[in-house]
Length: 453
Image (tube, rainbow, N blue to C red; front, side):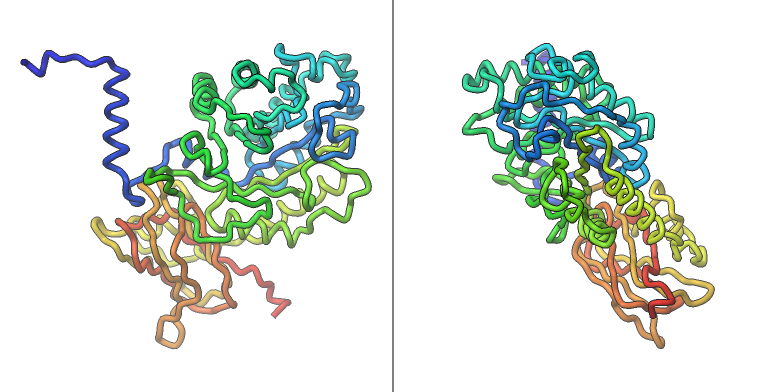
């Protein structure tokens, strides 16, 4: 037989290539992210918005019995939301378009249990559309959460019928509101219902091929990003982007979600004491973004359709505190030294690479005069995978090198803190890497003010 005459269908060739690549790349160091995943990780900080009938009933989880007439914000202003969210430093928003109670915030054709049956805008409104337009107006990317669990829809009792219902809702959201940066696939509740996850992802990908799917780690094959496993806003471990399920490896970066107000996601009256302080939010940032994860902060408009003044102010205060912390970058005053300067230029689009074939390297930074700092920010270029396995940040003191911070993982971003040190020489010592280390940024900061010494 002449093998050159055998022709396989294009789809079969693609599948065969994908399977071969998957089997060949079953070492953690060989797994690489998609372009969509690295772009999403660069966003670093997003906001998830909870606003529905629960807002008007002082509830967290609705049971699907709330009348549509319950939903009637009288001062709805998504621009007010987005202004404060932008000022917090967030780069994208995800709107809960349908929570577990089944009430839809867009005029879906699948059910009357939506805003078209509410008095808001005479039933002619489209809150999802309004929020999407406002987000983009303020330079924020937009995504949606569509709860699979539906405590109102009668079809939910018949899995096959409900799956079609849910897919039709998803298709509406995926085709009407422009590019979606993220799709939340939340498996909360569900009352024993087993969803058709392959078809959900197939439907989404048909219309939104670049959307990042957020899902629990258990939904290993369906997600692009994974839940951290807690709503505390903390990544409590060395953060590796590659995870293993049943011997199969995938790039699944972490997203850590936590509400702006302690312990709940929807607005509640007479609840000012639950608002987190700027100090608490900064700690959350350090323990999420500063550990290579995505921060997803929960924000909730009130029953007027506005962010409470205290919440909007706190978001702005948080953004101002972050800006103050990360300026100036003391590493910008380094003495230029060839390609190593690419990791010290404040530009994450450039990076320094260790020598080809190396598993250990040192990035040395010299300064024209001594600097004092107590934090270091390191970013790894991840397009070629996560390579750094162990590192040390060291300073030259009295002619000898002293380690001030050590770690096993850098990943997208690592923020290390240590007692204030003064030196004119610093080095990032890559003690072990699976391949040549690629460092996008090595930045130095002084968070401690001189007056507090």
